[in-house]
Structures are given as C-alpha cells and as structure tokens.
Length: 207
Image (cartoon, rainbow, N blue to C red; front, side, top):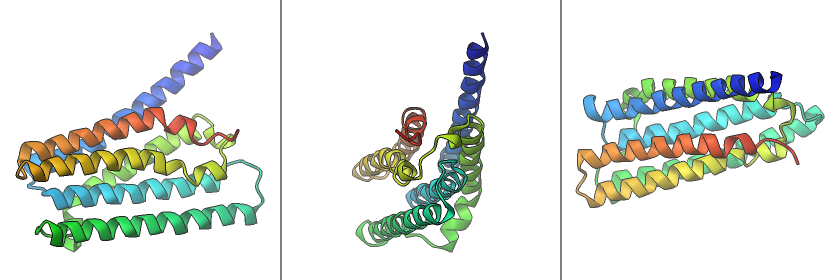
C-alpha cells in the first residue's frame, strides 16, 4: 500500500509538471492569436527556452549526489557549458540568418526580446517546477550521473527543434498563414510534453 501511495504521489508531481509545461507553452499561442506575435518572436522564444533547459541542467549537475570530487564535478559542468553554449550560439546565428536574409523578415533584436520576455519567464518557472517536483522531489538527484547529464538535454531539444523546423517549413510553404503558425505552436507543445514524459525520467540515472 505504501508503494501504491508513493506511486500516486509521484504521478501527481508529474501531472503538475506536465500541466505547468502546457500552460507555459500556451503563452506563445496567445501571443500569436491576440498579441500579434510573428514567426521571429515565436522562434526566438523557443531558442531562449533551450537556454533555460541548459541552465537547469547545470543546476542538476551541481546538485547530483554521484560521489564525484569537486574538481571532477567542475570539469563536467564546465565542459557542458562550453559545448552547450556553442550549440546555442550556432543555433542563434542560423535562425538570425534565415529570418533576416533568407526569408526577408525581421530578425532578432531587443524589441523581439521585449515582446517575449513574459513567455520566457513562464517557461523558466515551468522548467523550474519540473526540476523541483521531479529531480529533487522524486529524489532523482541521488542517482544522477554527470556523465549522462552532459547529453541529457539534447534528446528533448532535438525532438522539440525537429518539430519546430518541420512546422516552420509548412508555415512558409503555405504562405505564412496564421493558422499554420498556430499549428506550429501546438506541434511544439505536443513534442515538448511527449519528450518530458518519455525521455526525461530515463536520462539521469547511472547504469
């Protein structure tokens, strides 16, 4: 009975985490429908979300109880920050070039950031809730491995960004219709929640 209650408790934590993720992801949908967001604002928000995921992954590595000495932990954290930072930089350059030149629409800038900052805050809180409810609350940090955490974010991000690229291509081919931009946001929500449910619980436990 204790195990059943424990499973129910963890299930409720996962449900809250997923619900908060969906709620945060609905903000871009509201931005598209009611606030006049364009494709640049949506894509910049999703790029920034990758930075949020990277931030919480660093916190996970720092709080993991793997038994590594501080110098070893510092090496893994530093290595992750370098290669993940390069990934983020290349991704930003790619999106900026595509949006500002290849597709002849405004690129990223301070104005775009001002538009999406509330959405970014909601995503930061959403991923933070997942960190506290799942990683700390479920005790995942006790068996977490820094070696696996080095690559943990990429599974989720690859799924998310393949969905975004596919949805963006449909958006441009269709003549930039609002309905297709809405579809892009909805596809991203499904991909994000699916990745959270399928990939995340498996990624941090050492073998």
